Every structure is written in C-alpha cells, then in structure tokens.
Image 1 (cartoon, helix red, strand yellow):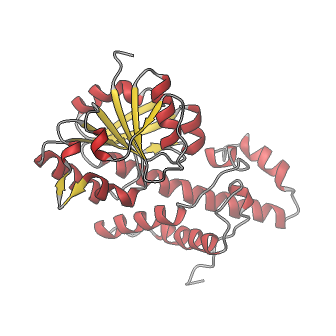
Image 2 (image 1 turned 90 degrees about the vertical axis):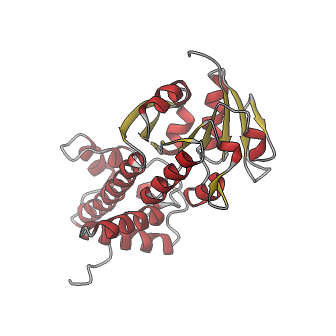
Length: 280
C-alpha cells in the first residue's frame, strides 16, 4: 500500500460493513456512518454520527442503498459541502442516468466522483475479493486505486461518468436471466425424471457451466432482484431498445418476490418457474 488514507464509509450493511473492515485491516484510518446505530462495526473502524464527521476524509465510499445516494450526496440540488474537494466513490448500484447527473453536479460544485458499483455480493465482500466496475476520470481512479485494492481483487475501468453503472446494469440483467434459465432447465430435468443433485453436478462440468450454477445452493438473501430488473427496463425504455427476454425475467422475479421466496436460501431454494408469456 502506498500510504495510509483517511477513508469514510457511508452505509454499514452486508456490503459496507465488511468493506470498512478490510480497509481498516489494510492500514487505512476508517470512519463510518450508518443511520442505524445497531449496524455492526468491524474492528478498527470508528463510528461517527453524521456526514459532517467525514469531511476530513481523503476518500469517501458510498455503500448505502442506491435510491438513497442522491440524498446522501446532494442538498438543495447542490453537492453537500462535506463531499467537496475530495474523492467520492459511489459503490452502490444507481440508475445510470441518475449517476451521470450526479457526476455533472459534483463537477460543477467542486467534487470528484467515481461510480464504482461492486459485484460478487456479500460473500465477495466478506472475502475481500469484490469486482469494481468503474466509471469516471482515470486520474481519480489512479488516486483511489489503493483504497479499492483493500477489498477488490479486480478493478475494471469501463469508461467515463456513469459507465460503471451501465456495466453493473448489464451484469444484473445477465445474472437474473441466467438464474431464470437455470431454474427452468432444472425443473425440466426433474420433470423428465433426473434428480437435481446429479444434474447440477453434471451441468457444472459442461459447456453450460456458469457462476449461477456453481453457486446455486449457496445460502444468500436476494431482496434486490426486482429492483435490478426495474432499472434494466427503465434504461432500455429510455433508449427505445426492445428487451423481450428482460421483460419475461422481470415478471418471473416479481412472482418470486410476491411469493416470499427471495428472503433466504440459495438460488435453488426458491424453486421458481417463469410465468407464461402473455402471448402464449
């Protein structure tokens, strides 16, 4: 590590808590804010009572829920004074159009943003081998590289402002499409008389192998699936692009959510099937 930094973390949930811990382990001075006083604090992380207490940090990571990000960064349409003249990395998943507007506001008001949404979920956060898909200025990324390396094994600069969120959006679209396809395939196999365990084992070694299959039985919570697909549809609608597969997957995700099957267990715990296409 080049040097120890003063790093602020906003949000101590399933991603933010472990990330803050890895930063402290890497030797950075870490201050963290979460509105929930019960949020767990990793060793070496100092809890603060508000954004103003993070104003002295060199770098700030925003890991709170995506819809909260504009409120965290802005006040009365301007970048909050606490975030000016420092590097702010938005690691939450945010609508790409909203992210570009935040970049514009920050640039106007003396802030420096990177969108750096994270992939590989809470398991990756605990292990410290997340993937960051980064959008924004290359010089800001270079300056923040040692911060990201504390909890990421891979950092990919995919383009300018908002590009990281676009990449995460596409990742989420492909992820949930893959989950839907695997669920349907396994149900078909079972209906044709093949037990799920041996079928999954065989498919993991086949040309159909994927991260979804590999982690099919891993315990996890997936409360954000329908929000992911909502953003996919909204982004596609803004471009006029027809995404019929995403439309089917969005309905499947909504059906699973409404049935209460996204609250725990692995992907396979839900046992879900795609709803019929309205034209079928």
